[in-house]
Length: 388
Ligand SMILES: *Cc1c(COP(=O)(O)O)cnc(C)c1O
Figure 1 (cartoon, rainbow, N blue to C red):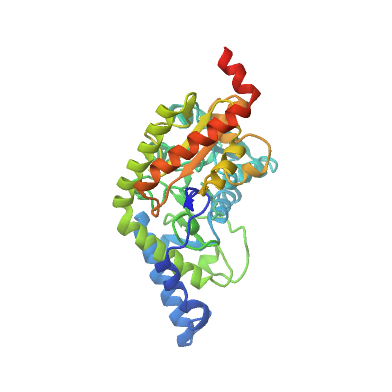
Figure 2: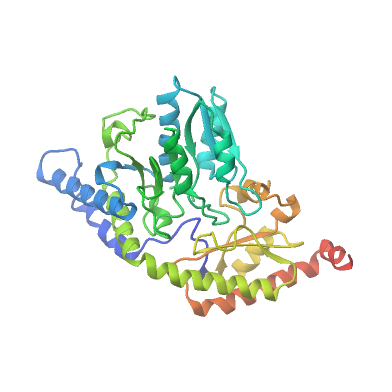
């Protein structure tokens, strides 16, 4: 099988699995206990915290472990909103956020907060001017993702962070898709909070982290035993934390090499598909995108059918995001680009990972061509397009 759906999830690196194994059986201690078994677990956890911090340029004291990207986003956004609600009730985000941010903002809207959704526009990148115009004296939080999970576009986080800082507004970014794939440095990006998730970077599912800049205070949204500075109480998932740490360490070592190699594969697939298939287009900005993200659309093609045809050829791909592909509505991200509904349904996302090889390119491109040809022959819509 050729797996090209790494933005949905990635396989656990065998080295990560090996690092985790002892913490299920032998070193099973509760990291909050005093005896040596517990101290061993605590030490493994703190080593991991250093590795996560190192990958994003943070201090280890600024990293708290969570159950993943969704929880990190919730803690950052609701934690800020509840803490600062006396100061203001206005939040700024974008119209292409992951549901973990989008739905959290919608929930807050139902509870007295006002949310501005900045348009990502045709190329899928928000405009700093729009952000400046949206800020009011009630704005308490800006939350804008680093890289988009569907179209891979990279937002001007550093510039947004500068503006947030000028106005003394907290700035959170969902960096689940960018961490480990492109350089991410919290200081350079001027962020106050940053979410990341282990299973998008070859670590296990159900574990992630939230960077909280020193001095930033959040209202806890989960209450319990005081673990993770009281921000994320609950007995720590030590094995998961060790896995996340190992995944971050490996990602840091191989970042540059993977970046170069995947960018080359990405660009060759894009070039061959766009030149080889009529009425095929790339969604999102051509260069300001993740090295591993390809998102096409094909006139008169239904994305789901295309995914199934490719599956039959041993290629795992997706249309829209994993969550929105279960619904019948077109992806809100593709609609935000200004696409017609019928075109938004004709998208194909290929997200590459470190196991993908140059030798797979031609087979993948030929398989897409075959599938598009076959589906168009069956499509009454395609004849109409032809005749125009
Ligand atoms: C996958 C993803 C999430 C959710 O992370 P989980 O660890 O699966 O909860 C959040 N944001 C983005 C951009 C993602 O791609």
